[in-house]
Image (tube, rainbow, N blue to C red):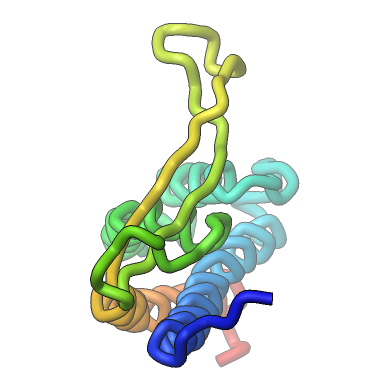
Length: 177
């Protein structure tokens, strides 16, 4: 069994904590998107939208569709669209933090550098969108950058979940405030 030097162990422990905090904050966003879709289905205007999509991308697209329908959610369109832009800035790193393998690279001198590696499928350019190829991806950041990245998600998560709660209480289900 190989032992990990104490400074590296401290880096890994902090990285695991930050990764968990990121996932916790992003799960609030993902749950709120699903919650709004499910609640909207109960409103007469949105009953025909169909069931909750499975993938995150499909859920985001469904929410974008809801904003365009003439109904109570449309009034919140500008706020929701601004949040979509916020989500987009996190997407690549989110994918690595949630799905990637994390380690301190052996060849780095800065022992607070983290590398995330993963395999995923990417659409083949110019082909049928159902066709894809396996892609190996990596992302590197140091512990300080990870900390700043995770901290930057907190207001977005808090603001979005509060917005969804306001929409559900005020427009879709009046009287439940």
